[in-house]
Image 1 (cartoon, chains in turn brown, yellow):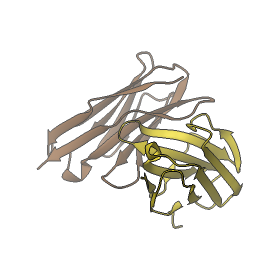
Image 2 (cartoon, chains in turn orange, purple):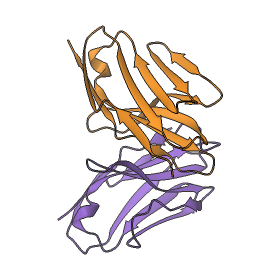
Image 3 (spheres, chains in turn green, red):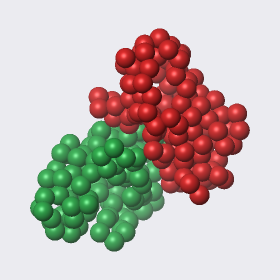
Image 4 (cartoon, one colour):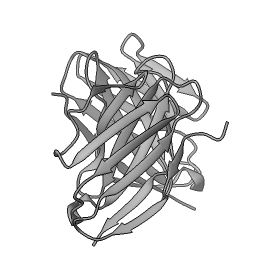
Length: 111
Length: 114
C-alpha cells in the first residue's frame, strides 16, 4: 500500500520568511495530493491540492510542486505570517486507494 | 450550509461501554469519511461511504468498530466494547463528486475511554 513520509516534523521560521515542507510517497499510481492545515484543537482544512497531471499550482502565498519521477511533492508558503502557525498534513491517493496522510509538520512562525 | 456536523463533541466513557459517534454530512455530498487522529498514529482513514454504501473499510482497526450510513444525511461510528486505546479524536468528512474532490471535515469528537 501507499506510504507517505513528511519532513521536517517541526519547522520554525521568522515572520516574512518562506517555509517549505516536503512529502514523499511510495506508490507511483497515486494521482492526487492534497495539503491540509490544522490549527490547535480544530479540524483539518484543505489549503491546496494538486493532481498528477500538473507540476505546480499556486494560490496567493501558497504553492505546491509535484515531481512524479522522484515521487515527492512540496508545500511552499511565502511571506509567512503568525496565523500560518499550525500543523500541516500532506496526503496521497491513487486509483482504488484510500487517502494516506503524512505524519504532519508543526510550523511555528515567530514574530 | 452549517457544514459537517458531529455529535457529541466530547465523550468520556469507561472501558467496556458502547460508544456511538454521529455525523451529518453537508447536504448534497455523496461521499462520507470517518477518520481517527491520535498523536501516535496521526490521521487515519477508517472507512468511507459513497451514496450510503460502504466502499472501503480496510482502515477499521478491529471488529469492535462498525459504521453505518442508513441515509444520505446521517452516519454512525460505533465502538463496542470500547477500550482505553480507542481514545482519540474522530473526524467525519464529506465531499461531493469524486474521491479527489475537497473533503470538508467536521469539528471532531474527542473520545476518552477510561
